Image 1 (cartoon, rainbow, N blue to C red):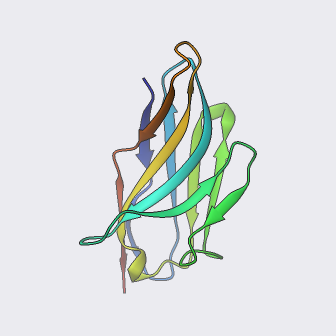
Image 2: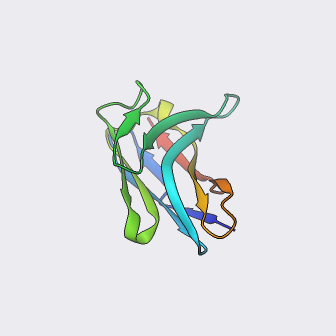
Image 3: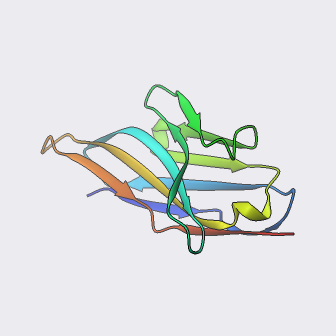
Length: 121
């Protein structure tokens, strides 16, 4: 079973930066897409950024030019570098990975536990 552990959230002033990390643990799996979502209080969870197995990236319009998603396949880890943070970026951030269990040939879709990011004005 794939488990995701996130780190890097916290409190930062507007204009500041944070870097989130999410590492997958387990064995016998290959990961395809990796993504970051966020959910602000009273709002639906939304996609922030996505990176494919080949390294192609997509971003929500609200974070383009400020956030950068990257991955280290040797560590089964995805990162989200966030710069020029705004109060409206305040949310719980969740990582997501999908892939294949090599032993069972079943696909998986795993989520992290969420890490809070608070941007003060």
